[in-house]
Length: 404
Image 1 (cartoon, rainbow, N blue to C red):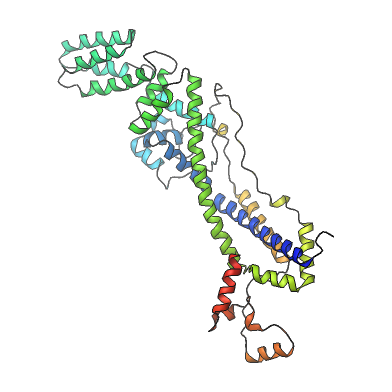
Image 2: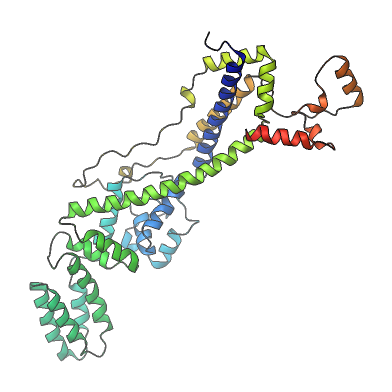
């Protein structure tokens, strides 16, 4: 037999017991994360940190391809008002059970929102602004300059338009309409390509930091497919940061859960090792349970690895394409039963864990001495002992045993 020495058997027994506790902590983490939608909330906050423009956040979050937030009604992104955007991005918004979004799906939703913002004609808003210029005789020269810019976009023609606007008394609207055109043409190197609508949508983002970041990101793209690939990389980087933050928070929660379980179950490593060393029958029982243990039901399901995607392929416009993980009541019950099964496995070992409460009388101490039994005042499972004067030594032993 492999485990044929007491010290090895004690070590194996302790490893087995604490492995069960580790499994239980993992199951509790999974149950709590599912019940409280912690992964969905982490994804929600990660997307908000990635896109720091509130209006754009809301439009993407409610897009049918993403569907992170339940608004109660089906809407197009352009129907999201400023007040609705504030409600959608609020911390108390109703978040759907979505724990993963395919990068290609997110980019498809984002590009759809940006292109919808751009509209069909890059120059249409400026033309509308010029047609509202007063006096009316000032419009024709401006329209001619705009026509030249359409036919041959260049930095020089934009500067000519800006100089012409300076002669108009009420020119704020004109400059506002020209600015997105200038940003778009600069990013596309004054070429009209399939990237123009996307860049124009980016140029209309209100948040300057996000707008500048995306314009810089897309300025080197030579095609819409390359732009999508760059946006996917940007999304993946942001989600990796969100994932790392979630893991750090989960580690803190796991440590607290482990300490709480050790305290509730009174899993004292030092006391447990002592009992296993002194009790060969119990030690053998634990070893037999370890040898027969089937860990398959306790193996946590791995997070699915995102499949390789073709950025040139357009996903079907359906929420199912977002590859969401729907947490149902049945799944929560399954996770609860798994945790209960692990607890039962621990209890079946009949280990000296858990608490008891027995009042130690002088008569009981005398009887224990006469029968050569351990001093009941030194029993670290008896909560009564920890409430008596002079129990500092017991407390120190208990703390060391639990922390071990």
